Length: 83
Image (cartoon, rainbow, N blue to C red):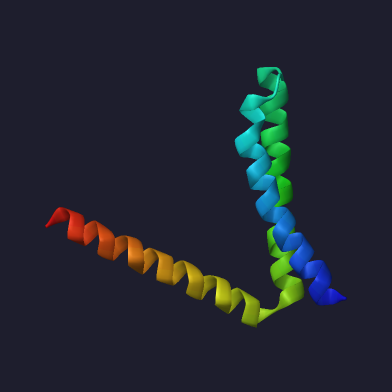
């Protein structure tokens, strides 16, 4: 049950960022978009960190490994573009 809640919160954290990207396309006032963006940022971060606490250090290590590979790939690509 703990893992299910953790994975659900992890997915919700990414969905919160997706909602932020969609907000400009809704017919909302600037103040409402700013408020919703702030709420989604805070909720996304809370969901992410609670999910990592529930899923444990192995999950966090996997996330770090993924982003390390992505960073290395981008760095290698940038080096080839400079040459």
